[in-house]
Image (cartoon, rainbow, N blue to C red; front, side, top):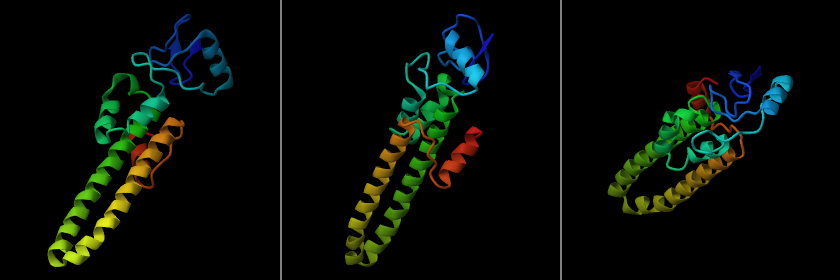
Length: 164
């Protein structure tokens, strides 16, 4: 009997996909993965045709919205890689939103008290926004490259949430 390299569930002979996690398996793939103990390359999911790395990268596209969607999709509930990136996407987008709100409050207070100081902070905000955008692109690239890159503090929190 063959076993799934991803979740370890038994796979019926001749089955193309694991009934437990939905990963593609074949007679040769199950025997090789079972003998070597190493997982094979990412396999396409049953319903969407997306590999784990593409789904992990797409979890960042619209921030916490796509993060929540990928946490709720049935075919990714057992995929720790996608769940990790979905949780990290949620935490990162919430942190960016919280920073933007706090920055707006600080800027409003400084602009009300001193217009010149408030105007001085506008280019600083532009640089910070550009850095957050670049980091967001970097996170998507890391997920697409099949890497579990962890944002300091937020990544550890995301890993704890998905049980890693």
